[in-house]
Length: 73
Image (cartoon, rainbow, N blue to C red):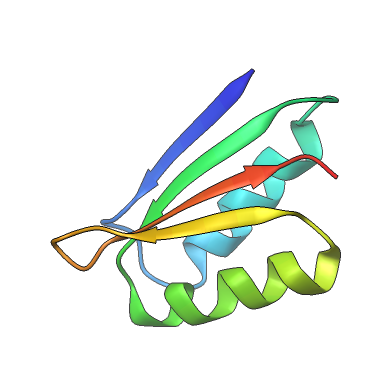
């Protein structure tokens, strides 16, 4: 299952909090796609994912939005 969260209008720390809720709900083989625009979130979320051991890829879109695709660990 793919969980999608558009956080482009949310400010830090809300995207991190909501993402963590989604990650807790994820089952085996689930993925989460999150789009973030807030500067703090662009910094904090990848750090959190790396520290927590979640594999993810990051793509910077034309409008400065960062899209993360997170796999369940």
